[in-house]
Image (cartoon, rainbow, N blue to C red):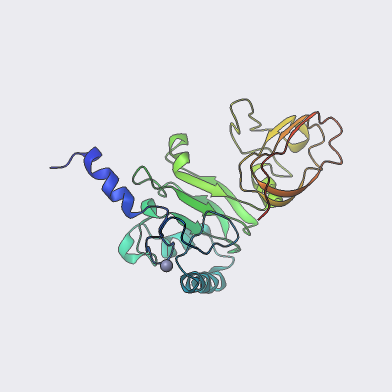
Length: 240
Ligand SMILES: [Zn+2]
C-alpha cells in the first residue's frame, strides 16, 4: 500500500498548471499558447479551445447574472467531479473565472484548492460589484491554496479597502497591517504583486506616506491628494 507521500506527486501532476484549462492537453514548454485578460492564469492549447471556453463562460454569464455566488457555485462548480461541467471537484480545480458574472452575496472558498500540494485555485472576481465577504472556513493556513484575483485596481481597492468601511485585508506584508483602518487613516500601503492592471487612483488615501505597488501591470498612478508621500516603490510594472 502506498503511503500518502508516495502517491501525492503522481496525482498532483495530473492537475499540473501547464495543461490546457479547457481540455487538459499537456502544453509543451515554449509552445505558443493563448491567454486572455490576466496573463499567466488562463492558458489554452489552441485558439479553438480558448474560443469554446469563452463561449461557454458567456452563456453562463447570461444565465447567472445577478444570482448569488452560493447558488451559482453549487450548480456550476459542485463539489463532486462527475456533476461538474469541468469534470473536477472543487479541490482540484485550478481556475474559477467569474469575470463580469455580476454575482452577489458572500463567497465561500473553503473547498477550493484544498487538494494536493501543487493545486491552487485562482478565483478571478473582476466585475462582481455586489460581492459581499470572501469566507474561508478552513482558516489562514489554507489561504495560500486559494488565490483571489481582482486585477482591476479600483475594484481591488473597493473590495479590500472599502470606501465606506474599513480595510478587510489582513497582514498585507510582514511590516504592514491595515486591517480595520479607513482609507484616510492608512499611512503605509502594500499592494505589490497583486496582478493589478491599468490606472490606479489613490485619491482617498490622503495620509499615505509609503506606497509599494511593485510587480503589477499598472500604467498610471493618481497621487494628487497624497501630499505626505515620501516613499514610492513602483518597479516591475510591465503593461502587456
Ligand atoms: Zn485545449
